Image 1: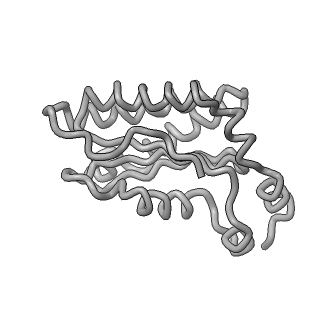
Image 2: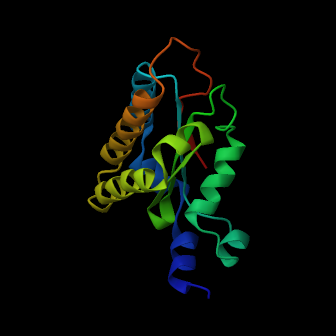
Image 3: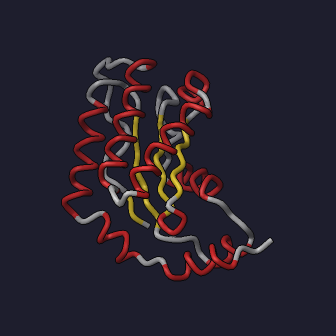
Length: 165
């Protein structure tokens, strides 16, 4: 069933809204938080935010989770030596957060753990605290990675720079 309200939200969401919520200073802070957390473990964290879905996928009913899997592949988060890459994805129009983790870490932590982190982030977003929500999510994901993949001075395999679509 087509959700008219959701379609309207996606049509009205703009890149400039995302830029206002995540100005350059916030993006640099997010990048620094990822770098700081990655110094404590051998996992890889990526953050991506997309203002809205394109009309085709939207009309087909694509949800944030399905799109996050596509972005996980596009950003090659799966392409790490220990299969321990994690994508934190925000679909702005839905204010929906998804965490997609590669099999090396997902098998150790599980879907319900990632879901809990997502809901905590979304609670911050409902209060308009976007940067704090992302920082909390990065810290939570980093703590999980630190537990399962302690730092061994491996290379930083993926960029820490946030991606805006």
